[in-house]
Length: 325
Image (cartoon, rainbow, N blue to C red; front, side, top):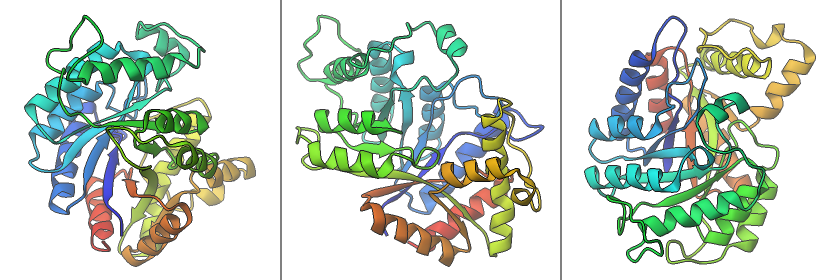
């Protein structure tokens, strides 16, 4: 099996709060480190009652400070929300505190609704060139010989691996143009995955950062000791997607027996589409599903998301995944 990593949205479960979410995330990161997972990534989202990772760089510092060897990073930072200089300073700080362990994935989406994006005090633009310009500016801030008069301190001259994230073909084009590794959000937006991978690989330009294309794909994995238990646990994530698409995002709900069977046909179809890159079952069953996914996509790494309501079940899910490596 390829290198496996963890994607954590720092879920806030029903009746809980962000403080508990962060305690659970640190415990999961320590668990993942012991299980030899390669990376631990958290994602920037805003205004979501069930996601606590809005201040992504702060959460990364919390996770990195409580672990020793696992790489910790952003999957990702939504660059339109931020000045490239601020991100360079934040991740320069993290790379100075935890050298050789920090990753920086960059996304184009706001990670929020339009009202929240405006409140973040960055201008909203539909200019397709804005994101590549920001990526270039950010990369320059990390350069040993920056082009700008302004310097990122800390930041200048530090090794912070950059990734381009995507849920469409646009991110693939940007990653190929800059010669950067590409991470695709196949765990919730798989529709353009194969097209995006084809574009990225066909148009990749080798760079000082990367000699050949490198793809990491995200996949939902819900593992338990029995298939029935895994299907039951997965209903928390299914509820989260239904609630979000219905315009009523919520804290992560407890699992429900027979949840999918109660849904309307349109809701079932939506879940089948957005969660098509998902493995549910025992350790052996998810291993087979993950291997089939790798065979189909030729991914170089997998980023595993197990967003489960119960912390012990979440730890167990990742343990079962690791036992199949």
